[in-house]
Image (cartoon, rainbow, N blue to C red; front, side, top):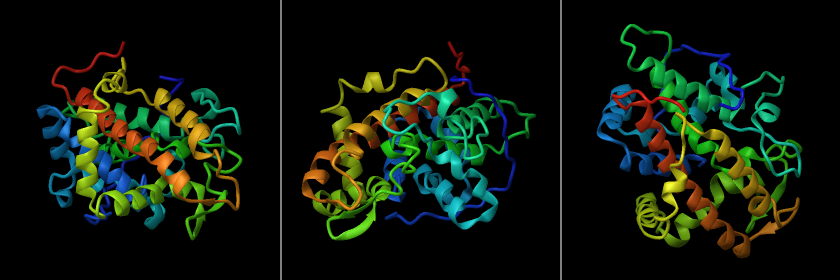
Length: 296
């Protein structure tokens, strides 16, 4: 598991900020990912998820898939979690290595998005069927894991150290001044919703589900190919390669990104959302199988 060592377990009371129905990867992206995942959960996994969700979520995993962002921004107690949303890689190498890259700004090992996925999947798999265990906050583990599986699929969450995953690259998205990271977190999805889906997230989710069963059906088995409980390292490697090939290309500081960029990058974004949803479902299905998963 990429040199992962469990070094941090946090036990706190869940603070839930409800996410609006029209919610980035920003809120829309995470909502889409978890809605797709819900479609592919086994009966056992769905029952476990509903059991662990906070009451306010009303049994809907998608309602809390942006929780990790909300508490990070609005509750000082959770600021420790900020480094867990991404992993920075050396500039221009276009590859990711767990031992080299997974650390926070103080170089504490395992504190990055891939380390967090290992950690919270372990908490859920060890804690859920141990009736005497109160070691982990399983509700928070579920919400963190669901969010971070989405984050690791956003290409600029595995971007370059020098520009903090595109955050310091100032660009214009059509007429609006922003940064490259925000373009990928939010603005491509927002533009797609307005242009193709009548600003209706449900229509976007339905279109992605159709693509999973039709256009991408031959690819789905490779998306699900994981011989361990969870496989965030290959997902991170995919993301940084996509960052180099699509996100950073033709997006220099001060540039204006318009139709050419939007239309050529939207298929990448939509496929990553679909992959995230399928893989999140597979992770949860393995964790909550009544026959415990045996790592190979």
